[in-house]
Amino acid sequence: MKTLPLAALAACLLASHALAQGQTPYNPCRGRNKIMEDVCGEDGAVLRDEHGRRVQREVQGDRWGNADGSEYDLAVDGAFEGQTVAVLQLAPEIDFSRPRKALGQKGFSVYRWNGAPEPKDLEEGLKKACQLWILSGTTQQLNAEHLQVIKAFYESGRGLYIWGDNAPYYADANFVGEALLGTTMTGDVPGAQTVGLQETKTSPGILPNHLLSTGLQSVYEGITIATIQSNQTLTPLIYGSAGNLVAAFRDEDGKRVIFDGGFTRLYCGWEEAGTGRYIRNAAAWLVNVERFGDEVVGKAKPVAQTPEPLEQTAK
Picture 1 (cartoon, helix red, strand yellow):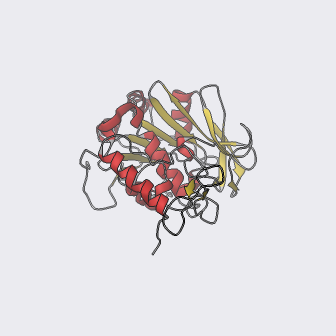
Picture 2: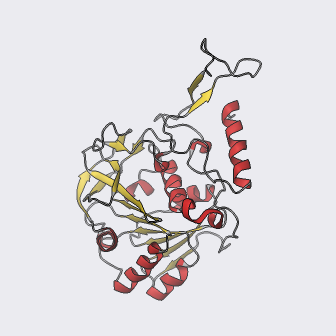
Picture 3: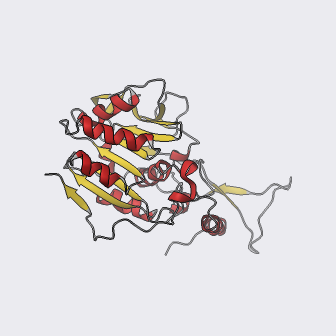
């Protein structure tokens, strides 16, 4: 059985107390990549150096150097109990079982459509959701009515994650991305590499010191990936090993969206560096706690208590 260091255990207890008081669903390490802990003597007292400063060390990491343990994710486990992630799965080959389990660790339930539902059904389903994830297929399945529903959902401040992948797996990602973000993704770049923290604004790696990259020093880029066309309104999040922009986000006017060209991380690369943590962090960030506060933090009852898989196949 894995035991937590004293400092990590204390941090977990403090985070849980804060959550219970409605203060924050985030762990104390939020926004940090390299996470440190106090070093204690045999008596349990924190050691100090000759200048009286606390002696610290980096917490135990996994084989990629990422802090090991869910207490180093962005959000406290169970923080979003009662919140639903809606998934519009337009690429049938994606196995969403492991992302579903990872999201459940933070309290999220998942409602998933296989294929595009009728626009009115999409609108009704999104009333239950705090965010929508779109997993794009090879041919466009969404139309102008779907887009209107998605845009209204996004404009309301609810989170949006638009996933594509190597050509041609970005048909609907580009349809929605161009309309809402003024950008698209293109191409088919070989990846299958682990990248670290960015050293410059355009170097390979993940953006450091952001809520989305909490607890991450390494992340898997995906197997074959599309390249996002950058613009002035998107903030780069992950650059691939080939120097291509893999993921970017927008966080302005109380609205949050991520645009990502590497959905193979959701299933083929799940066991690789940082994937599970990144998915949990992304969902926690897209809840938009900074805007909605206690409305989205562990108070509402889950919308659906149906045994898994909870999903609907479009007719």
